[in-house]
Each structure stands twice: as C-alpha cells, then as structure tokens.
Image (cartoon, rainbow, N blue to C red; front, top):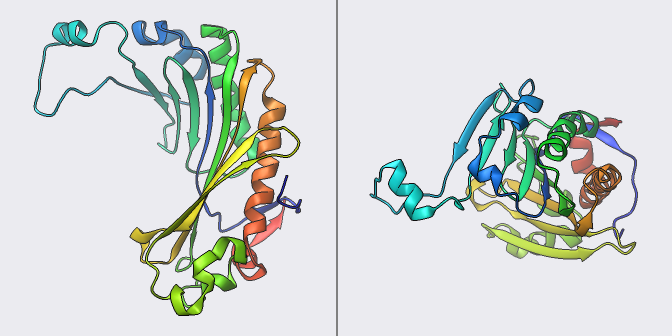
Length: 257
C-alpha cells in the first residue's frame, strides 16, 4: 500500500459522513418480480422500515400500474430499502447488488456486526454463485469551522500532496472549489482504491472532503470476503491518517483504538 501504516485510533470528533459497503453479483431477476419477504425477515430486527422504488416515468406522466407493467415489463429494476429505526443506516437490495450505508459510523466492529446479517441473507435467500465486486467506501468531511480552525489555512492541516493548490498562499484565499481524483492499484494485488478529494464549494471553503472507495473485482466466493473487507478497513485508516498534518490530527481528538 502506498500509504504508510499508522496506529489505529478513534476520533472523538469523527469526520466520517458515511461508510458504504457494496457487494455486486450476477443479476437475480426474482429480486424484481417477488417481494423480498424472506430477505427482510433475516434483517428486520435491525432494519424494521421498508421502502421500494421503481423506474421513474417521464415528468408529468401518470399511468395505471397495469400500464406501467406493460411499458416497463417484468424486467424493470426495483430497488428495495430496509432502514434502521433511527434512519441513519440502511440496506439496499437490487437485482445485482446489496449495500449497507451507515451515517453514524463508530467502529469497524460495529459496522461489521450489522453488515453480516445482510450478507448472510443474500447468500441464504438468493444464493449468488459468486460475487463480481466488493467495495468499501469511506467519505470523510473535515469542517474547519466545526473544529475551531476556520482561521487556519489548509496547508497547515493537510499534507502538501493533498492540499495541492490550497498550499499556495497567493491562490488559496481565492479558491472556491477544487476536486482531485486518483485511481490507485494496490501493489500487493489486493484491489484498487479510487480517491476523490477536494474543497466543498457549497460549504464556503471551510469543508474538505476525502472520499476513498476501496474495491476488488472478479469471481469472488460469496462467503469469503471478510478478510477482504478487514484489509480495506485497515488501509482506509492508513490513507486518511496519511492525509492529516499533526495539527488537524490532534483537533480530531484521537484516542488509541
């Protein structure tokens, strides 16, 4: 991994806005044609609310359900959502992927504990022969104002390779939005990571986003991805901590994990 190993910590002022694990598999068409009742029963204790959505009709067009079925046919993709009572975690199921999204992430162990039933339900109910993609995405938002660092320049908070143009004092004060995308192949063949980072123009220049999507593709065994996800979790921590200079790292109030 091109990002150096560093001690795992927990930030009291957690910058994570969202963590998503998505698992893709060859399409299972009965996800579209049958209510996912058996899948729901396996995760309903954790995700009691249910929602679904279908392809959107053109604006202003309203048609009876039987006509919609004639237009779109039985092959119309359906997205099923199972939502936690607090609304901050959800499982999404479609014909070719299942995903867990969490907006109140605390630790990997807590995340893995609610991910496991969703993956087990996928295997038990739909029995995909293999997985085609496994991804783990961490979206961090660093808000200088919330951290009491609004008057501190980004080049004092982020390593130069990340701060980029924001490290140039003659330019930084005038930058309203910047975004950089990196595609990195992990040197040990363990997959890839797509990193998108930059200044959020909608937040008045005080919020910096670091979005890292780790993934691997191929024909992967449905029951054998835990080690892959644990590895992605560790690497995501190394990447994020590498981005931070000591002042920002301290402002996030780290404690040993």
